[in-house]
Length: 99
Length: 175
Image (cartoon, rainbow over all chains, first blue to last red; front, side, top):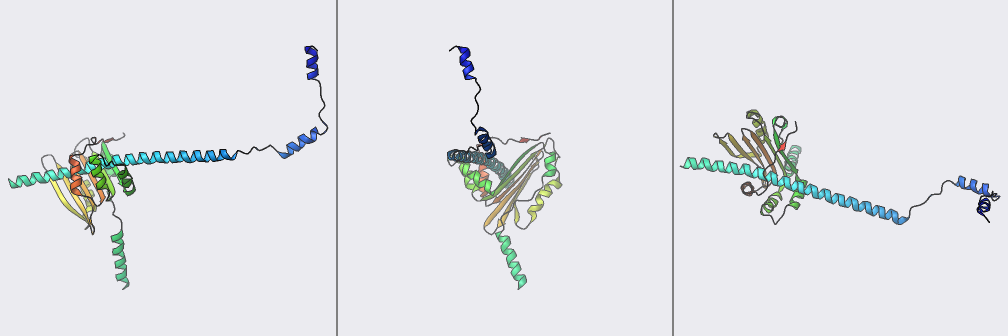
């Protein structure tokens, strides 16, 4: 068999089976087939989301804590220096009045 | 009888009321200042900060001890480009809330040489010191400190002399 015959044989018209139309109409009426995600994918997604939230929360808490620590140190330094200044000024005045 | 009960209830409520920060209005000065430092830490943030203060670092360990009894730290520091940007009336407005019977001025020093003034106020409570307020003014700088809660003044003063932390970085005011 040459190529031309082979093609003719492969592309020849074939009649559908008698119930073809009925089967197509039944499928159309049933609507699109729904694929349900596998349960483990849902669990994995939930765990990944929980981990991401936990990690984000930890990072944020760390950032807030370090920032608060720096602010406390700065505030204490300012307050301490002003008290120190007052203390020194009082000492200077008392030295002057004693001498 | 009812009046006495009401009075007792009010007194108990006042005794149980949490220590409050001093109500200062900074709007006018903030507009005139060239640089500002603003620290505002309430109780929950202070407790969080305490967890991040190291026990190994000598200065941080001291601060950690101090912070334990505190309920709030509020610091405002204004720097001005030239003298006369704040008035005696401005200072008076900061002193006004400290004129209540709870507060007592413990130190008030004035240096005529460099025009520096430092006033230290303490809040007396039944349990001891309930807070501290400092008004420190220089010709081109004004600092207001309010620490709410029980504070050890000697330890705080020590910190001011030997703190190994970077110099105060003033926040540049946006034009």
